[in-house]
Image 1 (tube, rainbow, N blue to C red):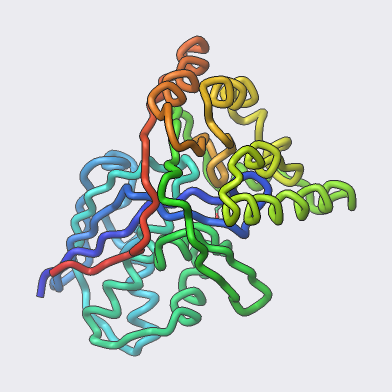
Image 2 (image 1 turned 30 degrees about the vertical axis):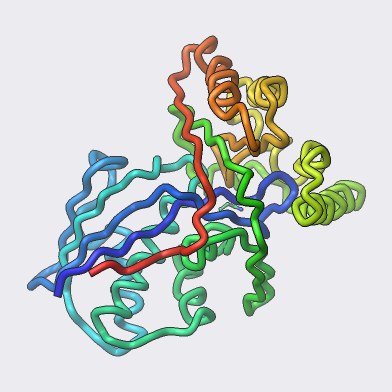
Length: 296
Ligand code: HSE
């Protein structure tokens, strides 16, 4: 048995929807898996120098944890073709977690329910906004309170995401450590209003509202210092015609939402990093609607 698990990148938060909104993107990590006598991983592409290839490998850890849950044991070797930059807020870790859980289901021949998948995934990453879209695809709202409640919403096909990728590694842990424990009521209200506005603007296709809708007081004002000229990159994105510009997940990537001028927007935003001597690139991505898939 040899198969490939293909798992999409995701961009989360989308401004005000901290830990609640996630969007799967057409950029994939592939995991080629086959049973073996012992555990090993080979990594090609993003992270090939840094990521562990032994039992500390995240895909292998998620796979083993799922097999343990299923009462099974079968070592594997995995070849990872990584296309998603690491430590940039694009859900690269989530692809390894979701991929490992799916591989265990395939090898054991047992299917897990979504709540079971999420329970296992949360042991490795306790926020749903990358894991869930990586698994289900699409534009997802997640609500957690012990259990997970979620809803997959329609994403307007004409809207693409321009992802600007600076050469700045930022772990989610580091990027969460700068956030306060509590927030003033006015800031919480500010974000609630804008998440509601964002979902409404997308439903009504009134994209002129998106700029206001992605404003946020929960995470971006605290994380902006981790990314040089963050606000200037946002301004350049808007100047070049983006409807919305926001920090992707925990960063350091910055996402822009647009239905035209994709390259102009990408170039305008990367030019800010160029001026600072920080290497960067951009990708123009459509939304993935299928989520993680197993290919024989
Ligand atoms: N919502 C998370 C954060 C991203 O912003 O820290 C990863 O789940």
